[in-house]
Amino acid sequence: MEYREFGTSIDWGPSALGFGAMRLPTDDGDVDRERTIRMIRTAIDRGVNYVDTAWPYHDGESERVVGEALDDGYRDQVNLATKMPSWELETRADLDEYFEKQLDRLGTDHVECYLLHALNHEYWETYQGIDIFEWIEDRQAAGDIDHIGFSFHDDRDLFEEIVDAYDWDFCQIQYNYLDQEYQAGRAGLEYAAERGLGVVIMEPLRGGMLATDLPDPVREAFEAADADRSPVEWALQWLWDQPEVSTVLSGMSTLEQVRENVEIAANSGVGQFSTDDHTIVERARERFEELMAVDCTGCDYCTPCPTGVEIPRNFDLYNRIEMGDDPNAIVAEYEDMDESARADACVACGECEPACPQHLEIISLLEETHERIQSASA
Image (cartoon, rainbow, N blue to C red):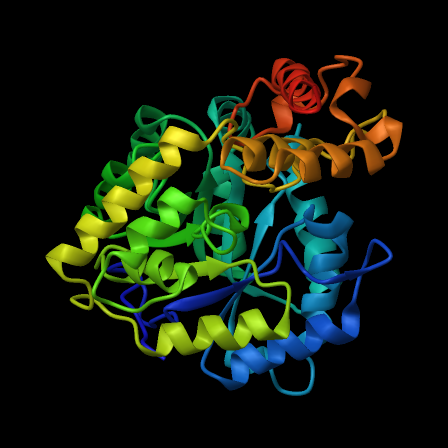
């Protein structure tokens, strides 16, 4: 496993692959604890030393099961990262309340890496109003937090403002070969790295979109390459070829994915990609952009919907139609869904849209999704 640079102020190197605990395996809707613990420990046994979770993942169960997985000597082998729930805060006292609850969930007395979660203009203003920097310094002085950072979902101007506002150790951004100009993007990656921040990558496979069942034009772009790589390997190695990338979080949900990702990471490194390889990836990106209807990553921040609409699933069906899946199969899957889960069950309450890191106009897109699927059945 390759170990990467992690900013000028941090004296340890994270593994190229980090374990992201947002999309854990489930059983009847609950986290499958046995499978998750086995996955996390297998990753650590094979060299992963960065484990990332957050307050809202799996309604809090992610932090708890990560804590359980790090029992039996595993805690000392990793840099543990979790995140302050920015949307829950009103006062400085809230910072202490949530942080202490997180330590309790995780079964630890400190975290190596702590992030302000999903920063945007609104949350950034909240933090500035509750003396966040003083709180950070107090917690670091007490030994509760080693390294401080933030995850980000907004425009690049704000990203640069936040980078310059404090002596951060690291940041976390959404970045993959489709999202080179989205939010912080490549320019933000380079901006942060130039200022000494480690950069953690989230959504490297865009919620699985870049991993399996690629549309024919995208698949054909990769098949034209001399190199024989899986779609996952193309996406991950493209990231690891960039020296500014510190670690790549993969939201693995099966043991097979852990093994596959670890094997790919073992062969990663700057310089592994040729000029022709970069040309192939750019061609695949262009094919994707020509086909994609909704820029949903399946993060589930918009759920649960008060009326039961399965928002990411509906958008996945829409994208699959546009990318060439059998329309009859899509229509059948849509009609098999509970009526309350379908796109047309949306009552436009608006609760989902502020929660979307991609800033999608979910209400109108759900209407568009229903219309598109209905037209496919005609």
